[in-house]
Length: 327
Image 1 (cartoon, rainbow, N blue to C red):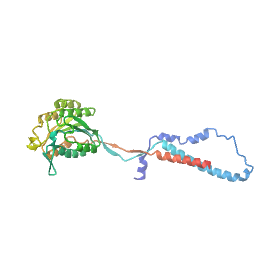
Image 2 (image 1 turned 90 degrees about the vertical axis):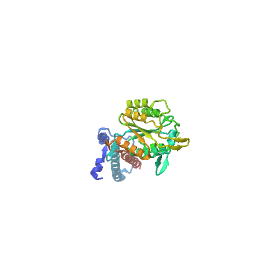
Image 3 (image 1 turned 120 degrees about the vertical axis):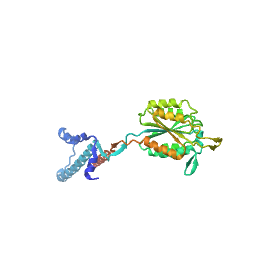
């Protein structure tokens, strides 16, 4: 940084405080001088007077210089010097995104693949959603987990690492074996109610139909529409028959696609179907396009207060002056 730039970065928060600089001179000439009632009489004063007067004059001059420096530093500290850094671009229009993930018992079906290995639906969702969360820089992310009940695992936060960690720690059956889609939507509406419309999104992932809870999913969608919450629904599961611990099942057959489509359409969102890991990845990439991170930004210049330095030097000089006067 060049010298002109260095001086340009220094600013005073209260420059009017510099008007106090001549205050000691005004006090000296306007106030009556101090008088000393007692004096020390020396019979040999005439002999040492030349040396005393010379040393006293030098001592007073040094003390006056130090006192003026201490006063100037004190006034500068009072003016609050600031160091103004280079402009930093900050996002302005980040969105509030709530993820609602189904933890019902059917999420245990292993009809997805990761790295050539069969995994259950929840593991695939965790892997793909983690990448999505990492890309949402500038957005606030929240996490709702639901089964027989819906509960808020993470409130809206810029701390994406915490959301990722808590999502990875989620376990099937943690919220019950059934599926309360309506309650999950209702909880998201409640948590996002005070946020501005058009900037809040719910991404709901489920592999089943609403079989529990107190709120009908379509009524919850109507409520979401009134609050300006846009819902993207993702139906998870293969249509192939696979062996489950309880016999043959059709994992994708219990998915209530008509309801999920109506929920998305009611709120201005979209419905997606993920039959495998590749489709799930493509859905999240599509969501990145539909709900892109806000590009608008504002410039912020970091400010660091420097008053502590002149104030500290002024106090040290005051202590030095006191010691020199005693000596």
